[in-house]
Length: 308
Image (cartoon, rainbow, N blue to C red; front, side):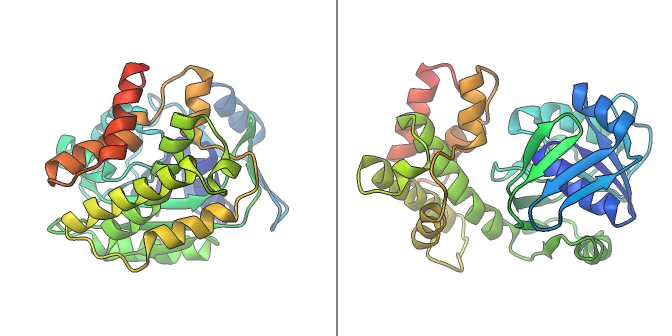
C-alpha cells in the first residue's frame, strides 16, 4: 500500500514515520527547512518509550513535486491549510485512493468531500503528543498514538476493504488504529476536549493549571464541553461516555504550563484554527437549533480580535 502524508509535523511526522519504519512505502509532502533536513539526513522521532527512531533515507518532496497516485493520502495539516490540501487531493487522488484528514476540527472530511466529489474522503482524528523539535526531528514525549477513521453515514463504502486493510497495516506499524463505524461520535469526542481547552485557554490567556482549580476558567471549560455534547445529540450522535467527566479526568492529569497549538499559533501572530475550533461550533449550534452561548461569546471576541 502506497502512502502520501501531507504535513510532516507532530501528527504527520509520527504517523508517517511509524509507517515508514515498518517498511511501508511512504512519501512525506512537506516544505522548508524540515523538508530539506529529511531529504538530506532522514527523519528522527525521539520517544521516551522506544528510544530514537531514525528512518533514512526517506521519500520527501514538495506538493508540486509529488507525481504519484497514493492508495492512502493522510491530510495532517492545520485547518487553515485545507484549501491547499483540497487542491493537492484533487490532483493526485485516484478513484481508489482513500483521503483521510487527521485534524482537530470536527467535520473536516465532509468539508473536503464537498469540494472533491470524485474522491473518497473519510473522517479521522488522532491522539498523539508530538511536535517538531528541530528540522528533521520529531519529539514524541508520550506513548499515546491512536488513530480513528471511518465513513460518514450514507457515504459510498466501495473502498471498505481497503479501509479494513489499512487498519491491519497501521497496527502492524505500532499505531493503535481503529476503523470505526462511529467516526462522527469518535471525532466529536476528541473535539469536545481540544476545542474547549483551546477556546477557553485563548480567551482567558491561561495554561493547563488554570483549568485544574475551581473558578471561571474551569466552569467555562465545562460549559463548552456541554455545548459540544448538546450539538452532538442534536446531530443524532450517542456518546459512549460522560464527556464532561472524561474531559476533566484528562485535564486534571496534565502537567502545568501546557497550552494548545491554537494558542501558540495566535501568540506567534500567524494563522490559527480559531474558525474551525471555535466559530464552527457556534455555526453548528445555529444549524441544529442548539443554543451555544459560550461558543458564541468567544467566537464574537475572536472576531473582534481578528482571529476569525
